[in-house]
Length: 508
Image (cartoon, rainbow, N blue to C red; front, side, top):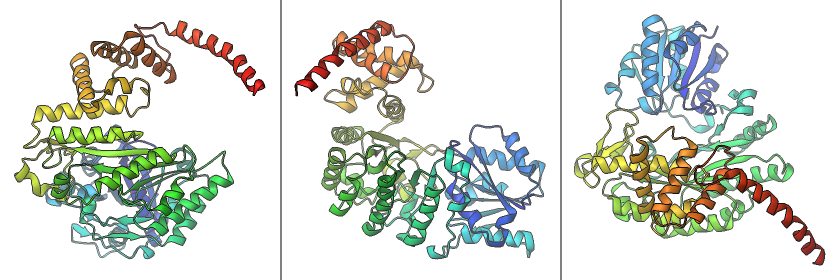
């Protein structure tokens, strides 16, 4: 039985915790007395407690994040009720700030704030071997990255087959964007490159094909970025039928020619770039200490979309201090014109410890006191309007980011994407009263009625929606079109067109 259990509640099964693996890899002589146990949010607290206690641990360490803090608090409370002899240690970004204000910190025996590899290992030794620590809160010691044992051997073969492999080539961030906890970092610290690449190679040899980099600024040090990209390109060239896939977060206005050349070499389906624009409003950028050359960012996005096969996931945030709906709408329309594959419409959150809280009084920022601490109103956007924007964000994911409405989306957006989609979102909510669990057929039929109400020709709306519905793989019925007859007609047209194409080929 392990003396130490490292546990967390992930958002999905596919999200294996990198943080727990970092802790276990650095336990030294206690590593073999430890085990990682991961749950998924939404399960029964009592079952989680039962599974933990079945291992008869002396210490349970929980990784606590904004998405799991409420459920983890209930889990810790239940665990301490039935097994008070178990020492509970909590750590992670959610409990690294405002410790005294959090119920989960009061329930726990110890709290580790900040970096945990060195501090948790030492705390565990004291608990198990003595002398028992008297201090409750333990600030995390930040060692040189060369002294940290890399965690990638902690991924099991099952993880590599079924889950995302999270990796980090660097920690920290040199930028000071105040909505982000990374604003508290002094700089970005790179892991030694050669040992890191050796670990990537070992993961690849074991079967890993999806590498999701958690670095805040992957393109900060171009030489290191190029070495990692070349590592991936070499393996794509060696096995094009089974290529690796990589996800990186890029600074939008820093894309030198050397980096462009490497990115342009990636074939389709092998590279995703997450790019944070957040706001195009220069005054708002100054409020939140964000340095961004908007013209360069826009030019880089346009180049990436037109000249590479990279899948572009671009972020905007609504509710930032000093930004009203009109300003956000201009930024949204500007971004839509650049045609990224996905636009992540985010709602501002007050992460514990993030400097954004300093603007609360000056800009009337009112945040939800419960996780996820989303903005409820500002001096520029009242509560009802913020609710409309939140529904816009949800429906945007459901329609635009889902990839299920490729032909229909241009008809919905027209020449004024933000205003048109906001009207669609308002009407959809009025019709359904919900933002989740909307039947696919109902969504397509509502979109059809909405387009007709906007003056789109029935034949055009029906054809676009029918094509999208069939392409999605759905096999239900739509009231506005006979899908079976349409599919049969297209199969017949394809069979007639094939010999014609062959004859053209022969003539050529």
